[in-house]
Image (cartoon, rainbow, N blue to C red):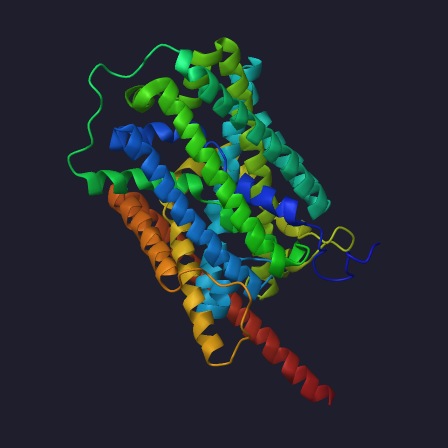
Length: 458
C-alpha cells in the first residue's frame, strides 16, 4: 500500500488530466449529437444557432468558476451536498442527495444504459431482445470497475472520453474540410429570425444548458484528487473551455453540411451530417461514436454519484452501511452496489423515463442553490469565520448572480412547459422530508443513548 492510500478516508488518485477528462466526460453525452436540431428549430438562423450555443457556454463557464472556488474552499467528497449542508443546513443537502439517489442519478444511469444499448443494437444488428441485457450488463460492468478503486474508474473515463473526442474530431474535421464540396442543402429562401427574438433565444437555451450540464460532478470526487485546491479549479476551467470549443465546432459542421433548415428538420444531425459527407460508413462511424460517448457518460455517473450517498450516510441521514469505505479499495463500495441495484430495477421496470421527466428541473435547481452558497462563504470570509482562498470567481458578485438567474430560468421554463410533471417531481422530492426527519430523530436518540451510557460508565 503506497503513501497515497490512507488507512481511512478516500485515496488521492485523480490527477489533473483525469480531472479534465471527468469534466468533459460529465458534460458530453448524447446531447451534442441530437439537441442542435431543437435549437435550430427555435431560432432558425445559423448566426442565432451558434450564438445560443456560445451563450450557453458562457453560462457553463461561470458555473465552472463558481464550482472551482467552492471546490477550493471545501475539497471534500460529495460536492454540492457538502456546500448546501454547510451553508444552508442539513435538509436542503439531504433533499439534493435524496433526489439524486431516488431518481436523478439512478434514473440517468438507467436511461443512458438503455441509450447505449439502443445504439449498440443499431451498430451490431442484434435483436430487440438484447436491449435489456446489454443495458443491465453495462451497469454491472461499470459498477464493478468503480467498486475496485477510483483509479480503474478514472482510467476507464479517460479512455472513453478520449474516444468520444476522437469521434467528434472526425465529425468536425470532415465538416470543415469536405462540407464546401457537398451539395447546397439550404432552402432557396434563407431562414429568417423568429418574430420574438427574446422568447426564441430563451426557449433554445433550455436544451443548450442541459447539454452543457455535468461539469459539477467532478466536485463529487474532490477528496480523491491530487492537490484539489490547485487541480480542481484548473480541471473545471480547462474541461468546460474544451467542451465549449467542441460544441461550437460541431454546430458549425452541422450548419455547413445541412444548413439551418436541414439541421432543424433532422432527427439525427450527427448521423445525417457525416452520412452526407462520408456515406454509409460515416453513419456507422458516428453511431459507434454515440455508443462510446454514452458508455463513457454512464461510467462517470456511476463513478461520482455514490460519493454523495456516502457523505449523506456519514452524516447519519441514511443507512450507515452506505457510509463505509472499502478497507482495501477506499471506495464507497456499498453505496456503489446500492446504486447499481436501484438503477437496474428502474431499467427493468421502465420507470426511469417518467422519473427523469418529473425532475428534469432538479439539476438546475441544485446548480442555482449551490451557486448561492458562494455568497454565504464570502460573507463568512469577510467576518473572519473562514480563511480567504486564492482562487476567486471573476466578476463576483455579478457573474454568480447571472448564473443563478440562468438556473432559475431553466427551472421555471421546465415547470411551465409541463406543470404536472413538475408537481410530481416536487412531490417525489418532498417525500424525502419525512425520511430526513426519521433519520434525524434516530441519530438524536443514538447520540442521547451514547451520552447516557458514558455518564453511567463514569
